[in-house]
Image (cartoon, rainbow, N blue to C red; front, side, top):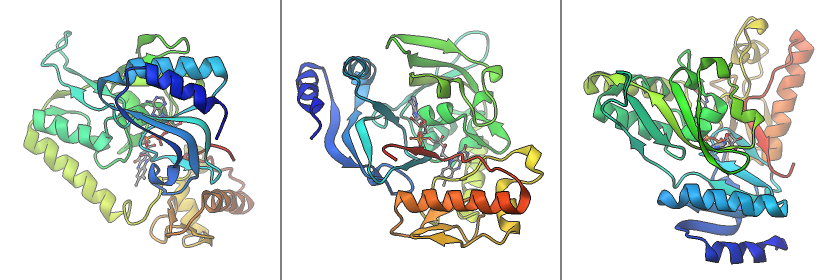
Length: 316
Ligand SMILES: Cc1cc2nc3c(=O)[nH]c(=O)nc-3n(C[C@H](O)[C@H](O)[C@H](O)COP(=O)(O)OP(=O)(O)OC[C@H]3O[C@@H](n4cnc5c(N)ncnc54)[C@H](O)[C@@H]3O)c2cc1C
């Protein structure tokens, strides 16, 4: 057991905490690939202790040089088989959305806590008759992860509906950062260059008919289902698309006949060139090796350097 865990216990016992924490927690239970070794310490604060406990924990860790990894829904991650050294701070217990009738300026805003599952937010918005978020229906992961990744589907990005983020900044102060599309680019957010914890997002929405919103969300979920998104454990698209390549990454992989290519338990989905799936016993190392093999094969055939969208994290 790492030496700092003793002083963590002292810190933790003195803090106001609700939720769960475990030592040597396998990350395979917290990632959609269902792979990844243990985090030295995994903590999921529940309820509204998250911001204060999170700030205290980050200060505690910073003072001792203990790395902290922020874990959302694990829907875009390949965690090393050796796991995560230090702390995995899981946002999944910090959920809920506040739907004001009108927060000024005539446009409604929705304040959503970072751990809220994206899909649950779409459902709640539909129930309350707030439109504009349904393009995210069926997307695994949390609101915080979607902001950090600038998640994108149906030709729309998270940045298109994001007005501000409430964060714990590098000094662990709670600040609200106003944001606009100019702060983001394709699958890139300003938080990728910062050491900040996203606590909540302020999103734009507009009044709409619950029936219409529900129908659109159901259509998009069905579309994902038909495309095989949920047929096997994965992290969605492996590679970013780039207009300069002339075709989507998945199409290039298809054209080279690489669907079904496998290394260990990892396989290019036979039904989707840009998905790698865990066929049941994949190690994260298999997924990484297959990702590299695809990059090499595409580079050799087309001279294109595909850029992974999935994130390799932990003790590689
Ligand atoms: C079947 C399937 C379909 C998918 N379809 C799409 C799609 O259409 N479009 C798309 O863009 N993606 C898609 N993805 C990928 C994934 O859903 C998104 O990337 C999602 O936004 C990841 O969110 P998460 O909460 O799981 O983040 P995680 O994977 O847990 O983390 C991703 C990164 O965000 C950071 N992070 C997470 N939360 C916070 C926080 N609160 N504060 C600071 N940093 C944080 C993490 O440290 C990590 O670096 C798909 C995945 C699957 C499995």
